[in-house]
Amino acid sequence: PRTINEVLDAHYLSLKLYDYINMNADKKAFLWREISWIYEDLKEEKLSKKASLKALENLEEFYFKDDSSSSKKETDNISLLLSVLYYKHGQKQKALPLLDDLIRDARVNLRQKNKARDLFVKIRKENKKEKNKENKI
Image (tube, rainbow, N blue to C red; front, side, top):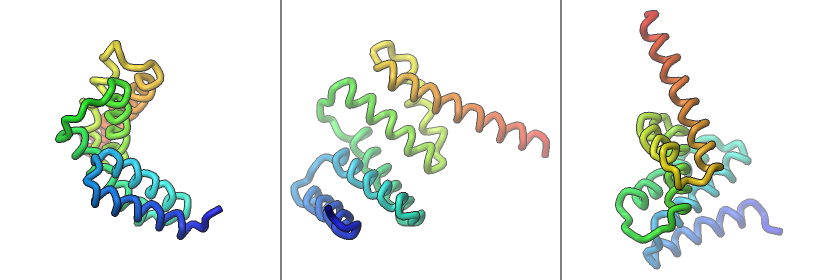
């Protein structure tokens, strides 16, 4: 068993090593996501948000700039995760096209498709509520 500080040190060391060996940004994104979850569990909201934003930045870099060949399932997982991170950080409009692609693609795993649909519907409802509030003012 490790202490929480040892766990965080191990994650940060991994990030440094990933930078040193020039590892793909998706691997860094997943580490940042884990760090975010650790801070979330520790009720460290500011640190959790910073780590989550780092995960978003790295995942965006990988998704939009990396040309490595990922499997369809991996690409779909990354699209879904990127959509969730966009939503979490108030960038709903960036999430919608990715979610729409996942929902419309017949080759997407049913579980992923359902998660994408749930988040898509949630965002659309929130957008509708916001629009209604604006119209009442």
